[in-house]
Length: 344
Image (tube, rainbow, N blue to C red):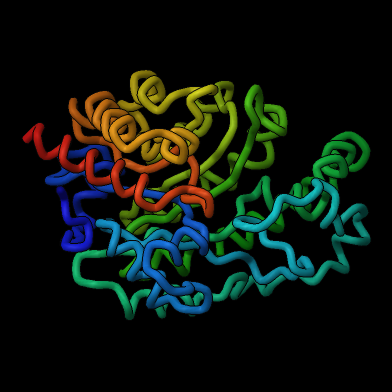
């Protein structure tokens, strides 16, 4: 079996996937996030508060990169945009009027996030590894969080100026944060998570996404590309109506796939010449199927997504959850890398 922990990281191989240029020497892995519970189950000790343990986890799994994100310095009274218990869509709505916008305690535009964690992880990276870094929570996610999904929907009609000002504020905050991150030599690629849709559609209309969200994506990708770094977008939901827009924004790679919406193999057939798919293994399948079934599943994914050109990274379609058996995921990684090695 493949010894994932003995893998020597080589971020250049992952870059070949993101840039869709050249065939990587091994099958890279990628995940957007991993829960604290999953990480702790793998390394046998808590990860919270320890960037050393966090880096050790990714390296123990055979990765070439450490994915990480830091949220804007915005206090929503105990809320966690990712990784916590799901909340009601209006629970943290605090911006309902232009007056609310004006008095809201926005983070400093000069330092909208805490950059120290990236500096700390840089100190811990082994040779050959890089960070794939960005801001936690995307433009749509943050705006719908602060305004509420219903509040945002009403404001699009009742007070479009408020919507424009909130998105414009976040545009500035992302731009300033990513300029700093893109300048860090230890960050090999920029990334952004922003869940734009659900099973049948996007939350905002395609026209509203084109007006408010995609201009921010274009700024993000331009900042990354100006420093010679690719840009990854993680976004859940049915994005069929806006994939062409996402590609036009300059996004290099797309993460998050659901087989009931668009399997990763089908995405690669439709769009893989212009944007790299990464991940795509069904979380439920990995959680509940036998190890033999998981091995066969991972091998099929390699054949479908990696064999022809090498422009795919193995991972789940969403994230590593508390309830996913670690041993099942390792089976998928090992089987995938072995299948890729057999193609050489």
